[in-house]
Image (cartoon, rainbow, N blue to C red; front, top):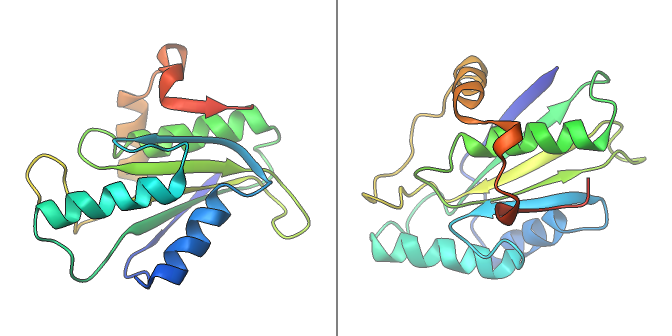
Length: 160
């Protein structure tokens, strides 16, 4: 049903991050949300993530991590795609700053998909997130921590 792609070691130059934040909020965006950042302004969210990295002295290597969640044809509507992206993002919400979005289908991407941009520095202790979970671990953890009936609507703007 879903495929999770984790891109570690993203290029850290300003141009790449600018392109990524523009992509997150492009016209195909169905919803946008975040944790620990001003997700309504993706550029500001990235700056806030960088401030946390600086606070903990973790400005080298991976600037941010991108998690891409893609869906097959079984996800047929925007509401379901948004729900699943929120579930995936919830996996990181206790310890990491994130900004995430769901994108609709279009001629470039035949299926719904989502992006989670994560600061790999733990907001509590400054440790780097180094071991990314398997898809099965994420699914199990999300199911335990995510309650779609109790979604805090203040944490995500949704047009779904």
